[in-house]
Image (cartoon, rainbow, N blue to C red; front, side, top):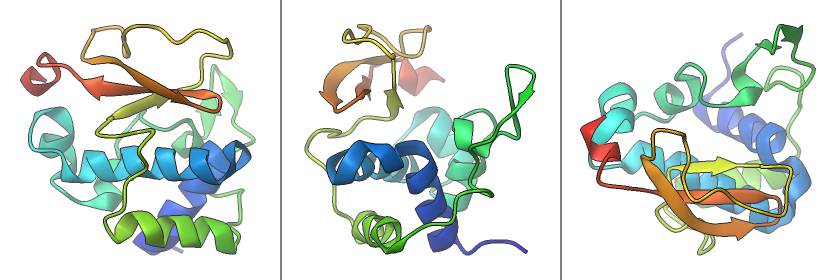
Length: 147
């Protein structure tokens, strides 16, 4: 059974940031919606302003992968039933709200460290913006718009 966009988004929020508290979930949801609404680059070209296309773009979200590093991924959108708070965050983001901690970021990453890298991903299309809980957030650089 295919999930509605809202359900898929709520599941992604729970799986990717459920342990990050309300601020972390809202910041992560902001990044997803920033990708939906971006004015150029890879996410506009591949997602075409469609939430489902952004979420399902290959290799963007660990929770959308059935396998990670050659092992079965135990934490996926299919194995994480969302709770009301995850729907509430999805609705909040779908209504056009943004978390200040993510700003216009297009990426987030948990470095499992107290230090955030200056750039993400490695091709330097994103530059460090802010940290919210365990995740580092990255704004697009001019290089991103060439992707």
